[in-house]
Image 1 (cartoon, rainbow, N blue to C red):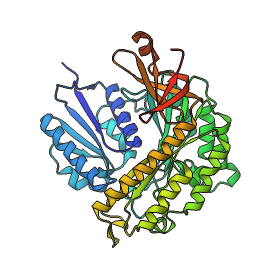
Image 2 (cartoon, rainbow, N blue to C red):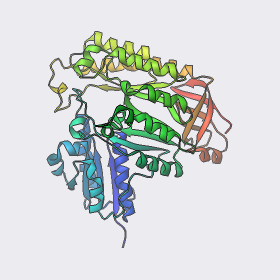
Image 3 (cartoon, rainbow, N blue to C red):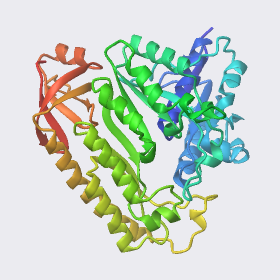
Image 4 (cartoon, rainbow, N blue to C red):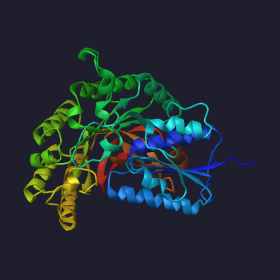
Length: 431
């Protein structure tokens, strides 16, 4: 008798990708197998996203496609869209269960025959880096964001559990661990309630503990609020330059103080800039990347240019540009003075041009510098390898025979940046 096949689909963030893998590995331990590409599955797991209206639409489309291509499959839906609209999701074809709280995932696995409930993951399929979820939940109330409504419970994983999982991932050959959470900078907040400040657990303690582990690996910190990049965290990055990537993705959203107030963000642009400059002063040419919402309700040309000016002042190496999308259920969706789609497109293009300027300047500053690269792909003829540097810059190096190039995949290697071509760094190595 053949074993039941599963198929998983993930929409959205790194946390979702981690949680899908958690469910997948649990099911595999109970006798399920990954369904072949050309074979229908018996069980489908869909991890949904609800950050935007299009996230909802893509989630529904994915479920319908799975039901059509796997007509006899049971479909289990989890994720933020499932939490926000469980009744709507339950009416979609093939759906037999809707998981509205990620804390229920161990129970979900138990209902599908998993006896030994996993405490973490052993990696991510077809990837050379591993996501390591350390925290969940957000207590902020930014006017544009729906996530605090669907992940309102703040909790952090114990240090010992995270450390044990990190050791497993390192032993399995993963050379980059990406720390991720819904509000990563609030790691430990739930542990600290009622304790004197001197006994608090912070993100910096976690990063330092992981950096002290033996092995050939590096740690990358995913999205974090700039004001939560504390002096202690910066000190850890400075003390472990070979283990902690000199790259921070600091969420800005806007460089205009008036827009930030309408967004209900907790600080102004000057405080954001000061924290970025502190990082740049302490670390050696760190990479700073960010998210920016373009066309927030009421955004004037002047306010938009304020954002562009901050981008130039900080010198971001990459920007995720999001034209504002009204999210039903948020304060911003009810605001007047909505910006036209045409104007959002114009501003998005202009901001992308500014990003190209700052990106080129940053990449040029790396020429002649040694970079630690994780090799992730090789050309068909083995003539060159591509990978991601510690500073989150794409790197390409010439390689010789193809066997040597393939053996380098998934390894960390130190290269020297030589030139910048077509938005990537060309580097030299001894491969």
